[in-house]
Image (cartoon, rainbow, N blue to C red):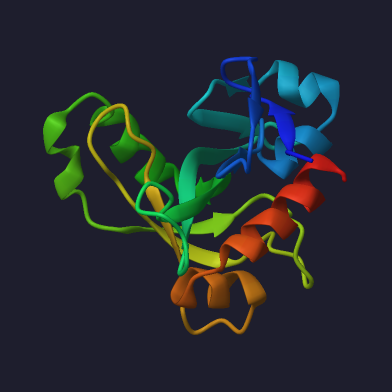
Length: 175
């Protein structure tokens, strides 16, 4: 029996494996009180969440964490987690200033923390990472710290099989 799923972007029904899964918001946004979210801002690519005391803010950007497919067809070279990472205020301002600039691809990699708990043990939240900014309209690439001993880091470094992509589909789709 073929796997079917409804796309969160186009709302159409698709069959086969989903090769991209994304989260609507960073976990701190989801966990925040309604008043805190009301004072913040979120869109498809960025998020700013004020501290509870209002003295500062947390800055997030959506990125793509690619897991190479080691045994897939040419059109399926990677499984992608569309995740949120936190950036320093300085790096977030630099991203904002260069958001539509074609030269933003020349920005150096920026330190970030993963801010979504993906279905891994131990948790993937707060894994150290770097983002690599790409051309306008394309989400940054997320590169996990290769020195960290974590299953997600291992999968990014060494790739996954199509069977593993199917396992992730079952987990993410709740089947």
